[in-house]
Amino acid sequence: MVEVDVHGQRRSLDSLNNFRPWVLDYSIREVHLSPDSQHMAILITATRPTFEGTLGTTLVQGLKLR
Image: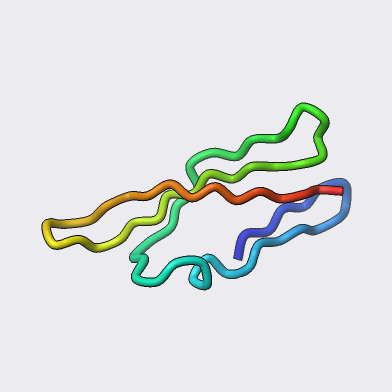
């Protein structure tokens, strides 16, 4: 589960395992705060198996902070 604490309030995304089937691993690449500090964008790399190895796909999750 991805959780963010902002001004004493906790916001969370559901378990990453509920987003995509057949994912081997998730890693957080970047976190961006909007200019008005009201929203956050989290860039996540999901690694999946392929016939010749693995493939990384970028997922973007938005989060309203207030």
